[in-house]
Amino acid sequence: MVKSYKPNDFNRKCLIGITKTITTSTGGKVEKIDPASTIKVWFAAKMRSLSLQFQLIGTTTSDTFDIVIRHNKLVTKKMCVQIDDVLYNIVNISSDESSALMKFDILTLQAKKKGA
Image 1 (tube, rainbow, N blue to C red):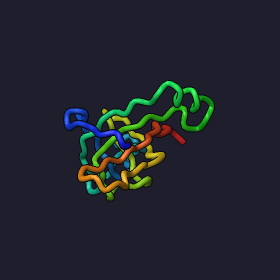
Image 2 (image 1 turned 45 degrees about the vertical axis):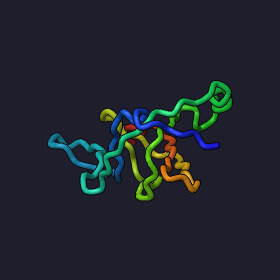
Image 3 (image 1 turned 30 degrees about the vertical axis):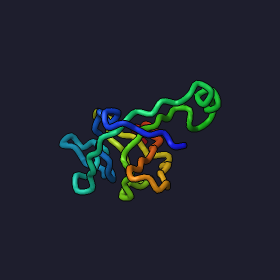
Image 4 (image 1 turned 60 degrees about the vertical axis):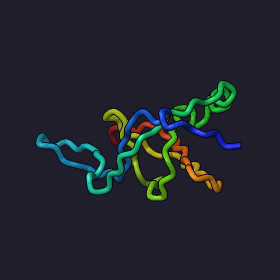
């Protein structure tokens, strides 16, 4: 059975979109989400069980976390998520393929590496 989420679980907003590199006035380069591709969505934080956290130790996904959004087929792995001015890569999208009226996607996020 798929976990159902209540509307009040979705209590934070994030921006999802394609990033582009912008040159600052000082000549530095900064990655920002392109405003033309931005989707603003509400999300819920998804807790991982303690046993799953132990299984992930030492893997490439040990420094990731999950959020839940309403199903949106426009969201792809090529996009990034911005939460509180921090950019995250989408590592995985677990889409709800059920026949439920309200569908949810679980996005696995990893902080974007700064610098080259």
